[in-house]
Image 1 (cartoon, rainbow, N blue to C red):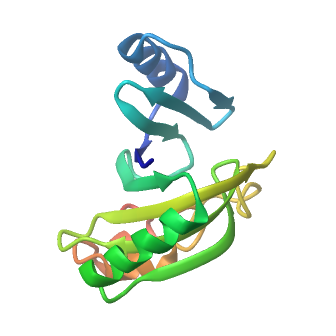
Image 2 (cartoon, helix red, strand yellow; image 1 turned 60 degrees about the vertical axis):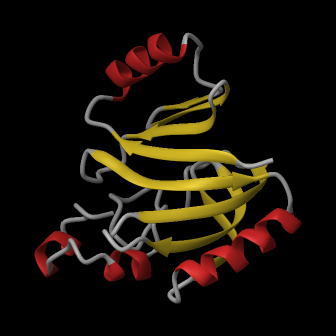
Length: 160
């Protein structure tokens, strides 16, 4: 079964956790110093927020699947939707180890489709540095494909 995924970059993590905990009427299922995630059943959504130096707002959208077979099926759908499919096998990001595919919609919004294999104790490879467009989570190729970004915006990570 698929689960809709939303990742929002926030200005104040503590304030945002309080807000979304009240909105969803439940505590986050994952809570870190720079990240929180709610795995909700009603509505069925993987809703994550992070404070990682990206522009405040929607970072990316996605679909989480429960199996490798579902991920393969989604890859086929994504290929039909966008020729610039980016594969990340064994990605380490957002405190998880996952296989994933990325595409960019016509408006420049990054879409991630992924199958989580395991949880990990770190956010990703960039944990000791300020994120850049090429760092976790949205791949540089996806950022580069976004029509909304100017060269200055890309270097400032505002489109990531």
